[in-house]
Image 1 (spheres, protein in one colour):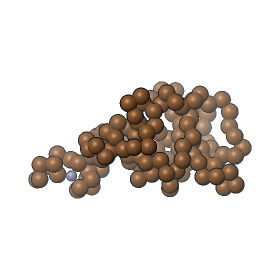
Image 2 (image 1 turned 180 degrees about the horizontal axis):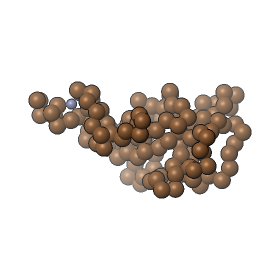
Image 3 (image 1 turned 60 degrees about the horizontal axis):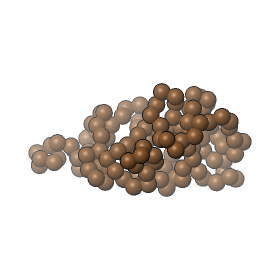
Image 4 (image 1 turned 30 degrees about the vertical axis):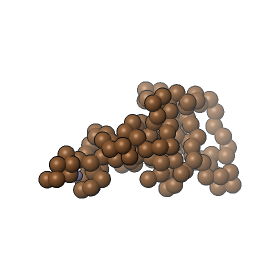
Length: 133
Ligand SMILES: [Zn+2]
């Protein structure tokens, strides 16, 4: 999946590289990110991911000091101290619904809270499916 349908306030687990920065390639390393801004129609389709001060954030994310009139923002945007603009075709691991962090099994689609990818393509296959149960 990617961020093509991402809306303000949506939360995703994005892929990160060995240095902790945003990766365009699926991996087993992920990080939570929140969509805090979207470009207004005349200005393009980009979106900004944001992190609060107490959340792990990529080193490449910049400290936010101001807003742009070209963007729509989440109401609590000032809580997000770090931001990084990305394209909507950025591959992401999973969308977090209702704050429930985890991954669905790629095969049986059961959801596993607090799980992490265990496949090189950034997906999870659960114990039962891996063992043919
Ligand atoms: Zn499964």
